[in-house]
Each structure stands twice: as C-alpha cells, then as structure tokens.
Length: 435
Image 1 (cartoon, rainbow, N blue to C red):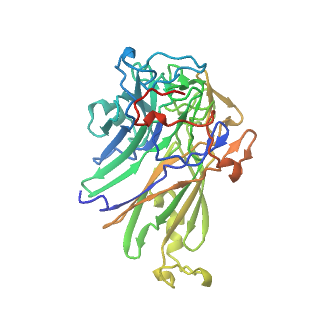
Image 2 (cartoon, rainbow, N blue to C red):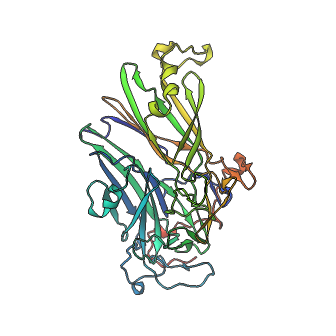
Image 3 (spheres, rainbow, N blue to C red):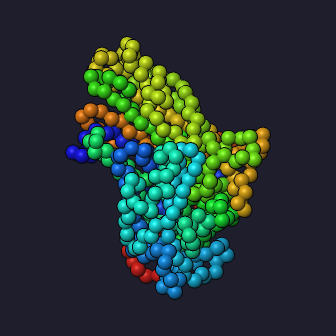
C-alpha cells in the first residue's frame, strides 16, 4: 500500500439527518453521537476492513463489567438518567452495542467496552470475536452502533441511553490492488427527556423497540452523490466504481430501534425486507437527466451494473453545450468534464414499533417516515484518487397523512422531543453534571 491517494476516490453518503419525532433538522453529522452507522462494504475477499470507534468523553465509562457502586449515574455521566419521571437513578454500567446487518437480511450482534477517552480497532477479517460477522452469507452490509445501559449478554435486548460520545471511522485497504480508502461513520445524536444518561428506547428480548422515551436524529431519505466520473474510458483514463447504500433502522420515536430486525415478516405478504426503494435521477455534465430505480435490502454494485446506460451512453455521443454554459475546462466537449451527479430519493417507509410489535396496514405496509440512507461511493482509477463527501436533503420527508415538509419548516434545528440535546457529556470539566 503506497498511499491513501493511490487508487481510490471515496465519496461518502453518510448524510444529513432528515426527520425525528415528525420534525426535521440540519445536519449534525461528524459530531460525537449516541449512534453511528456505516457500510462495511464487502468483506468477501482478502481486503482488510478496519473499523475505529472512539469514546471521546473524559467521564463516560462504557465498560459493562464496571460495578454500579463505582459509577456516578448512568455510564458514569451523573444526572437524572434512568426512565422518564425525573427521579435520581443509581449508577448503571454501559457498553457499546454493535449490530452487523447482512445483505441477505440476517444480522449478528455483540458489545465492546470503551473506557474514558478510549478508541478501539475492529478488524473484520481477523478478530476472533468477529467470526459471526464473517459467517454472514453475503459478507456485504452495514454496522449500526449505539450506547446501551445495564448490558447483559450481547446487549440485544438492552436500553439505549443519551450518551453522545462516539466517533467512528472505516478504513478499507487492499494490498493486492494497492489502494486504501477511509470514511467517517454517520452519526446520529440521541435525545432523552431526562437528558444525559436518560433512556431513549427500551427493547424486548428480541431487540425490537418496547417503550420509546426519546428519539435518535434520523438520516435523510433523499441523498446526493455530488460527483461521479463516467464509467469506462474517460479522457483516456479507465474509471470503475462501487456504490453501497444502507437503509438502517429509523431510530425515530415510535419506529424501529437501532439494532432491530429488518428482515421480512413471514406472517404478511409484504416485502418489508426492501429497505432501499428509491428513485434515481442521473444528471450528466450536459444537463441531461435520466431516471432509474433502486430496490434492495442493501444496495451494492458498480455504477455500470446499477445504472448502465445512464452512466455510459451520454458520454459516448457528442455533447453540445449551450453557448452560455460552456464547461470551464474547455470550450469543446472533447475537453469537458465527463461525469455528473446522482439524486437519490428513498420511498421505503420505516416500521412503527411498540411493545416489541411491528404495526402495519396490510394493504399499505410500513406506516413510518421514509427510511434514511447511509452509504459510500468508491471510484477507482489506475493511478490516482481522492475523497469527496456526499450531501443529504434535510427538508425531504412526509408527516402524518403525507404532507410534505417545506424547507423553512423541515430544516429547523430542534429535532428532538425536548428543547435540545446537551453535549456536556464530553466536556473537560470533571465536576458532576446537572440537568
């Protein structure tokens, strides 16, 4: 491996949050959060996939073996914590729960410990405790991470709490092809009525949402790949790519909890396993717009496989630019940028979930908000590459009977069930926290 810029262009679809509790917010990704989501792309070959998860708090102790007597409040964060009601709670241990979802609808989970200001490296190819991940059928999927209290066993049925202290990064290297890419996990701030250490959602033993107290900031149902190079020969350089998109659990109050099962429900004829049911606009550098559709539990493939004509044909014919809109790289099409951008809107809905039960209309299916998207675009050239972040539309979404949010309402900041989510859980001052 010669350099991180050796062969790959990584474009992140770890996107802005859209709606929570019927209200949207601006993007607060790339801040410490109580939940992280990231595609792990593909572990079917010999490429190394490393996931780095950090607890940036100088006080949060996310070690499940810690005695409650040695903890100041939930996760050692002080405050009221516990269930809604405002009563002071005794200390409770916490840990970080990991749910690995596979393209085939299966999943496997485990917990890890992160002490104060700790960072862990997970090697999906070699770590002995990650054998279950390698045992998933397709070896393609995504990871959903959140902080839970009173952890028992794998933590599958335990309660999520407001501890916005996690950061995450994915690093994928392929020594055979001599490239490496790195991209940040998408963060989702957790909000509880009792503030720091408070319960967000409890779970039944099967991992489904039981009682919702707060909410997680959700990801947007509309995302953009802001730039791609046309597949094949492009100005004498060969370009290929892989697009991977996950539709994770909603995390919205009253809907699916992080780590919840997202497979088909055998008792219905509806295909709830389709998490990405999206319309796609492919816009090239000549302002041509072509449309297509994505339907998948977990979307992964090259742009040529997913959008064959749309990402190749427009660039194999003469592109006549309007006189007032000549590409800035040259006055003739031969010198112009051969590429475009993607506008992807997901129409698959999240499932309403309470007391462990998924609530649907047999004639309609899922009744929640449109499912948010998180993903990554990787573009390869023989000699160079770079990283480009993707963007999300924070105003897109439907509420109630299908009324679309307008931008002036949909992009406002207060997305939580309370006024704001305090971030004092990562402050440097070691004094006890108050609410």
